[in-house]
Image (cartoon, rainbow, N blue to C red; front, side, top):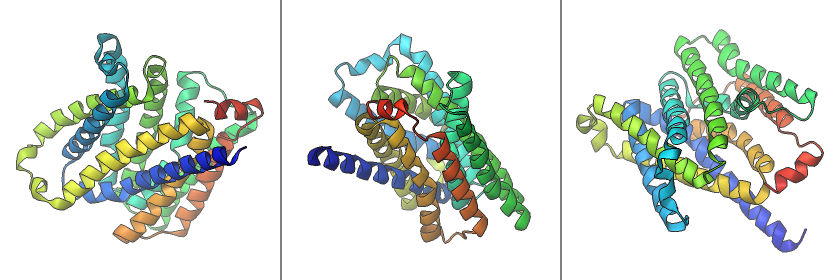
Length: 310
């Protein structure tokens, strides 16, 4: 490997770390927001921000930007917006109303496993080696440590409800990922993400009308706007942009491995910003989730080379 190629990889590793830090920061940010405004309003302004930024980038860089609005693409974009943007988003925000940002972030570490499980059902994808399937069990045991064990040691029914909702959100994201894979047979990652963001924004917008968004005190609260714009610009726009740029250059397998940093950043930021407690069970849960996800995504033989050329 040449020095230039090595520097290029390091640059994209840096972009991935920034993206994962932004994604980790979404947990304490969302926790702050759900204490200020209802979920539909939060989701609407988050995805309004990201949709505007994605559209600007799309029209500035894509050779045929208007094709995402073709009737033939509307069905798949509708499903993307319904599942991964609106469905995941409303479950994410609802869960955060009950549980802590730290617990939610650690459960999010199970996300790559839910993506693999849904892909196994939806696309009939198989892992290269049978032993890798033990990774699902190990990761799930890690989630149980966060969702269940701590609930038994220090029972809080709201935390338990919120954690279960967050876990369901992870499976919704897994469904979104499989639908997205289908969409990217005809659309680019940028077009797919832009279209889904716009559809999701419209769903949230209809919900925000029922919350009478125009009279909410949050509309005059700078803390609301700082966090809503952070979720829309840094978490959704920059995070996804850096992630897909890195996938293109270093491969999906290596880029996907960085997702394990999300619960780490989430737990650290939740402790620093919200002064949330971090129990020993969270550490065990995080470790088990990381081991499980690493097993599932461990590159085998030719798959390693193929991944780097993705």
